[in-house]
Image (cartoon, rainbow, N blue to C red; front, side, top):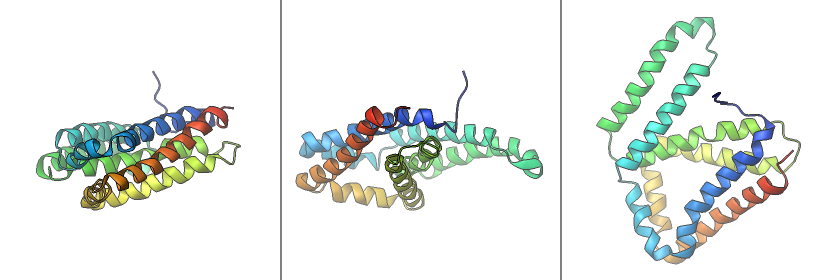
Length: 191
């Protein structure tokens, strides 16, 4: 099985469909039962196990990128050390910084996700590819802030879930983006 880290334009439709489905799954609880769904969202920031699972996914994905990265002749001797240092650093963060680990790991995932999306959208002929580009860059910027300051995600979740009306409105915005991605994945992106 070959793992493609930089997909081409034919992969834009399935990637947009996956992203749209994931965003819709995140938005659905806030749309249909905001009062009941608020508590699990608030608990996420302080949960350790979701952070560990997300961190493990991010470690694996980062190791794939480091292994596939052309570092050049100057840095090629460093590659084996990077492949050991990266998991050691992430495990150290999981052990020594368990506070807001889920937020940090979610931020790291938001930093890693845009790369295949941008690769797939790069040469797609449709101008609607810019929807995926905009979502990818918004995710990457938000992820960088969350990795650096994980309490921003905790505070954003607390602000969003503080009232059912606000939670439903934010969820509706996420659902609108998700539905736009799903519609483009079904009708526009297939070549």
